[in-house]
Length: 576
Ligand code: PEP
Ligand code: MG
Image 1 (cartoon, rainbow, N blue to C red):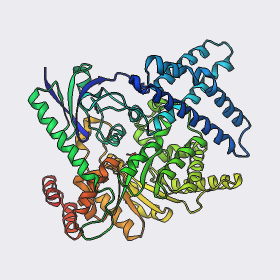
Image 2 (image 1 turned 30 degrees about the vertical axis):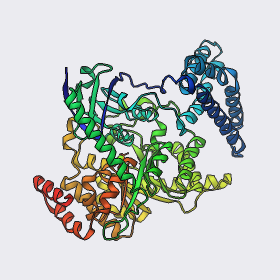
Image 3 (image 1 turned 90 degrees about the vertical axis):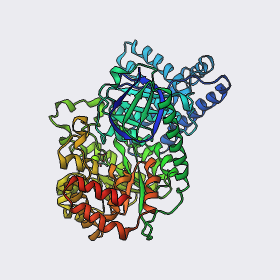
Image 4 (image 1 turned 60 degrees about the horizontal axis):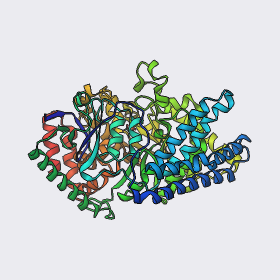
């Protein structure tokens, strides 16, 4: 039977593929069969990752800080020993050869076998060593999954898999970055939830709020994800399928055409430079950032590194990740946002969240960090150390009060002092900025302008808090309106006040990557946009075709207007 489900498109494009029902939040590493003639290459890939992980451990040992606990070196040695043992260095290769498993899968299978054996040990100390096995293996997996050479599952353009789920948390979604799915659809979720944001960053079509997809679709059914109109077509008839294939080909040609703009300087028709930055969630995302020709990373959502794990990433692990991003960007600015956990991005699978009556308004982002100063200091030290390797800037999320900034600046000072004592280098002039995403902050800008060196408007939260709608709740998704006069007034005033005061101001929320809003934001004075890499080239094309002298008065008309129907007309005119 063929039918169509309607939802909210969160990532554009069209994919035709087969439904893959994901019922559980626990997603694992990709599992696929490799071709017989790819076995040797896969074994070489495995060996390379092993060697890189061993080298990582050696390097870490060579650079242990003088005041680090003694156990640290012993722990690094233990992990090297674990990786050298034939149970991990040889047996997975047998699995690759005999079962034609991909390297990640072979390694994880073997790790699970070892962990089971550890669990049978009576001695509690030895039993707990299973965590060391897991950590050591994760280091190899990081190499395998972060490497450019990852072998893709053997799915052709015609055989893409579409994930169909009732709900996916941002933590689940980030795991999909390691897989090669063709699209995502969920029954629930708001368009600017972090789940949707990660889906968008994957650059593949996604729809949320379909309500009955998980119940009504069977595993393996042919579906079309229409990310342009928010439609899921199940078991399409041949005519519909042919039409969609045609549209798919058009979109592909369009993407190819836009690639030519990668090196074009981003200026308006009248020659005003417009900075286009990219948002990332994981260190390995920098390849796409460079590929899109971005001027830098305008928002690194560091909290994604803290999800899907029971422990917190330590200073070394964080430092390596931030340093890798700084180095990959080769001197281009990298804005590292400090941990923004809470609300829909819960650590430890959400432990503690359930007791919060309203997590979006609770101990989230800077509030959480200031309540956990040791954890915050660890991140600040890691960021500062990375600042030695590139043009790193620190961005503070959800600031509303002067004392939050004062406290944070004091902690940054303390972190610097600790690095001085350890004789570790950092950029002494590292800039600190704040996100304007709570209406109170937008209305009291001087508080932030006096204390900080740059600002970035987080429109996703600014809209959520201004209009009092939960961005993760699809029941109120229709009320999420970037064009609401209250939202536009806050955005416009923030841009204007900051610009007049000589303070750099960017927009890094989803509004920055919305093609419908580019001219409006340019007309309101915005000169710095940060968005998903996949949106950068279409936005650049729009910038190149915009005349500031024309859009400025038109943007003011949109801003002054309070009639929603007229707003849409004015915007359509602005974009025509
Ligand atoms: C925002 O709120 O607009 C933003 C960029 O941050 P996040 O979406 O991660 O909350
Ligand atoms: Mg935000």
